[in-house]
Length: 227
Image (cartoon, rainbow, N blue to C red; front, side, top):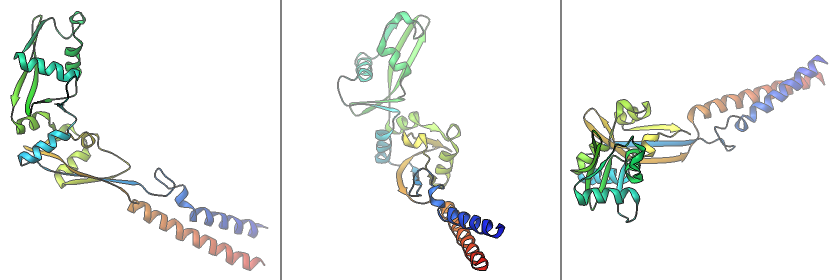
């Protein structure tokens, strides 16, 4: 009786090990993880800088009319500066566009093919909004974040040229943010998404598969001995 129970247990264990892809899948039943490769490179030419700026989410590109942030920035550009009484911490200003600019995520404004760094100066009860014209490379530098303030994956990418992850994304690269590292400016040069099995996962599954085959063989041999 005990031999029969042990044989049945070995058989069940072996079958469960053979079915390991069903419970070792990193997010889907086909056993494939999404391999994401971010490639970065130093920005050296105007063409590369222009491409990096056009992709970055930290850039406000004012091509369309009627956008509220663009309407405010165009008014600042046309008038040279926009001054009003009050501070942005004073709810009585009532200027929604100004508050929107303060909370905006953009670091650089592109207007009519030129680049500007938005600036806000508060003196006493007076606030002045201005736009400082910058070159393309200065705009990229102004929009860049330091690698010291970025994630470890970003630092790995700028030091080695790329970083490869499975079922994970790098927020800085997803937003196409320029990266400043050791005095150089880097930008995402390419992103690849592949449904490729993780190498460690493949080795683990192979090991479990052979363990399952071994357990089933032992169960079969024991079954023959009990017959």
